[in-house]
Amino acid sequence: MRIETAHRDQLQQWEKDLEQQYQRICQHNLSLDLTRGKPAADQLSLSDSLDGILTGDYRAPDGTDTRNYGGLEGIAASRELGADILQVPFEEVLAGGNSSLTLMYHAVLTGYLFGFAGNQPWKDMSAPKFLCPVPGYDRHFTICEQLGITMDTVPMTATGPDMDVLEQKIREDDQIIGLWCVPKFSNPTGVTYDEDAVNRLAQLGKIANPGFRIFWDNAYAIHDLDHQVILPNIREAALSNDTADSVLQFASTSKVTHAGAGVAFVSASPANLASIKQQMSAMTIGPDKVNQLRHSRLFPELTQLKEHMQKHAEILRPKFACVLEHLDKNFADTDLGEWEKPQGGYFVSFNTRPGVASEVIRLSAEAGVKLTPAGATFPYGKDPENTNIRIAPSFPPLEELDTAMAVFTLCVKLATVREALANA
Ligand SMILES: Cc1ncc(COP(=O)(O)O)c(C=O)c1O
Image 1 (cartoon, rainbow, N blue to C red):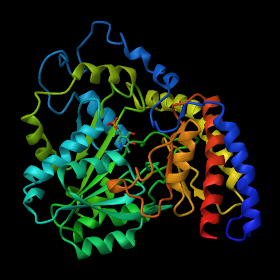
Image 2: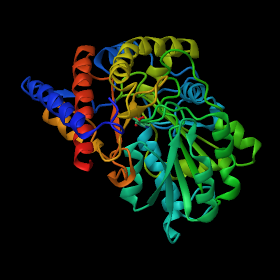
Image 3: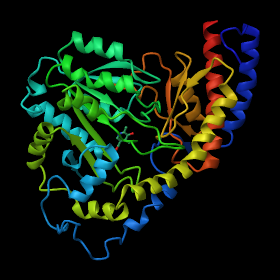
Image 4: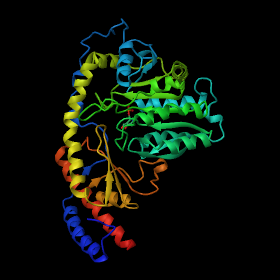
């Protein structure tokens, strides 16, 4: 199917055939969901031995009684786990509660209310602004929106954000004080930033406002599907450019152990970590160290963590393969859509022809397949080209995913053909 070169008669015939198939599918009363980027139950079960793992021994390896108050930075064993995941020294890691999103929210608040490392609080600037590579993660955008921080977009490429655009924006606007990045298996494109992108990002601290911070959300640091994909180390790149203060890194075990009961990490330069701890110390006496200890017992060394992630990969691999097979089979030789083949992470990002995504989502919903709302991957929910759809393969069982993808691909064809007819 090629839309660009199709004549009106051909488009009309396609519409008739597709409409018939669509009506047949609607009669099946499906109720399927491709929105949820969360682990499936069998993935969660991989970590069920967390329950009871302490067998009454609450002492951390350094002797800390984890049941008691204290230890704002988290127990050393947990900070070491975070250091292994982020490939940074453990002294620069704070291990927190169950959610890295919470840590990110608090880090933004720290910058906003107090400023990092002695810099001006963002709330005192005339128009503080974050740059958001798009498509991106909606919850990042919600944090900015809630605090009234303006967002501006930068296109994602196959190797990271478009660095020419990004650098130019930063040079021209000293009100830019933040940048959201999901550097490995990006949400939703699946892209991992390459060496050039990481090196150039590490140099932004030289041209940006001194209060500028990169929010390096490495949520999928160890979530490789087949082979290990290497993300260049931003801390090392920043250190060699004398910009270590410009980077804040985040990760968690949410998609490693139990998504709602894991351990989250923030890693930052000593000056930034001091700012974060100062803000946090008014808010809490310390994190859930008992849960941190459970995680350290489950993963005493990096080897156990890696073996565990292989088991996740085994469960996820057929699901990603299913999505990609449907896309290949239906769209490989067409001009109906584009997508990346992710090597890990939780998403496949599909771009329809301009102006078609919201109709695909509407048609799919009517046929019983729920997709992430149109625009969700853009700040303020506005996808200017109306093209991007995020597919989350992890949660549904394989058979449901297969049916949902058959509906999805049909809806892409029907919506595209109708759009072409409307404009023919
Ligand atoms: C890029 C990204 N960051 C953060 C999160 C949430 O992480 P956590 O569960 O640690 O708050 C997600 C969850 O989907 C995500 O995709």
